[in-house]
Image (cartoon, rainbow, N blue to C red):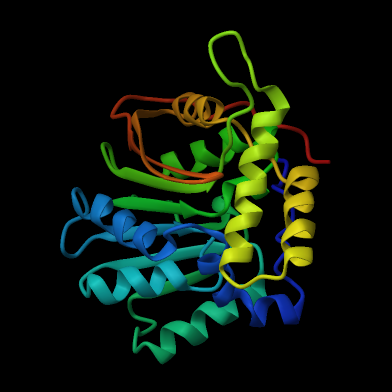
Length: 253
């Protein structure tokens, strides 16, 4: 199968600074974490098992593990340095290895489950559009029927009204607001501008409508948006109880 784009979190300096990033870049990041576990807890039992895709850094793992001491977790991430950072963070928080297993690789490297729920936070925008349905379907294959998936990532509109007014200008506006939030969070204007240009040039930022359609194509139902923070969106979706075939596997590049 084709692999998603390699994780950008391999530079030691970037890894060391990672914990600062989400709160500077993502409006309401701490509330996003709380909302994510609240949505999971609607279905995940007190002794449930949760799959965390893009677990490097360990921020969401720590948040969920401390709030729900009976939950167990499997986290997967393509960056070993980021997994090492997650392990250090969990150890410092007193979360033992008996509750969290970390796996180096992509979703197909994770255990088959079945899991009671899953999260994929701030990860999908690193995955090329043509590979995202397969990745979401791999997550779905590991969930129990009806189990929730919570996702949040960069997702910006590219048109205004029914006639499409706005076009690329609206996308640029939301990305400029993303940069303005960074500046308001203490990032230098020059660094924020470079980050904005890098997002626009290199990341697969889809429209909210495209993101919702991809989740449905991967076999999820009842897709509902629960979060919006400037250029970021978040959804909760359920796994269809019926049979759903994985998309055709693409030849490896």
